[in-house]
Image 1 (tube, rainbow, N blue to C red):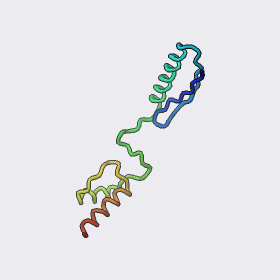
Image 2: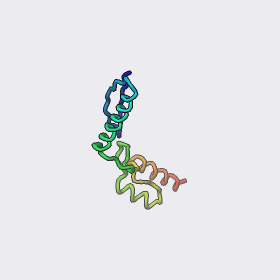
Image 3: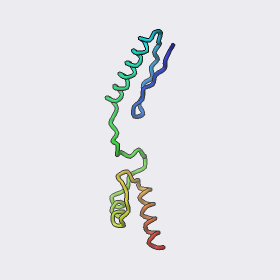
Length: 96
């Protein structure tokens, strides 16, 4: 029986096939899978848990200062568009 394996880590992967004839071969396949995955983890650039996965640019220092001034809550991953919407909503709320 041929198994197709594709260990993946942070959008990087390696595909391989393993022909299993006896149960010992199955253990070897899992060992190879683990070695490949550990190799991917070792060579993959680390992605910070706080790093934005969005391709949108992050809020500018001016937007952050404005949000701070108005007491608008935001985090380090707030994009320019999100900041603009938050600021506009705050301004609209003042005019109501």
